[in-house]
Image (cartoon, rainbow, N blue to C red):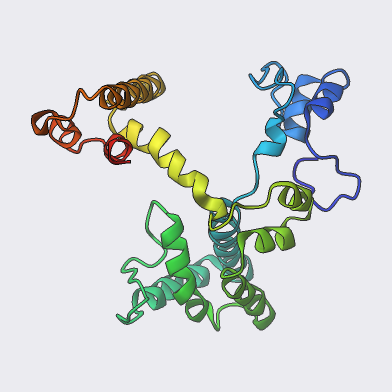
Length: 261
């Protein structure tokens, strides 16, 4: 089952595992039990030496900072408060937690959250900053043993991403042993590619059916970068009047960095 990470009989996801399920499970069972859309064939299915299930390694940002703290612990505290108190009392307690977060004084290394937890878009930096003021904000509103469990997360974040995820996700240990993280490279490095390939192109669209526009934007940027590299190798952009900075007006830092390298 996709949600049971502690099952000793769990089998790592693989092409062979998926193929075996296709002949045994109905379409709806495939989705409900394994999260697999049976009538869609991934483009990587025929790759002989590239298993997409092994290439997708766990990352610190989405599974620990965002997943464990924001999506689990913060929601856990709210669910506990609402379950242990009447609706009116729970609303007052949650309002007090927000008030405590907002009342954190200005201090080097601390961020202010004037609206408490009530901001819409949580980034990794938001979650890490909120960790520093969240524990005292909920103190007295949750049991002591619950408070101690929440205390453990910020104290282990400074450890390497591989160690944290290995402790938290036993099913991923083999993946970490096979690939682990590159030297001096955090496991959340894939987020930078996500920003470049998804977020920035989306901002350039008209927001109506954006995927087609985003793919076209990325295609144009790749072609432009390749053309500029070719032009530079031929000495066609040596003139200051045709320099990359002047021509591109610094609109695409990625291409400028290619030229500077």
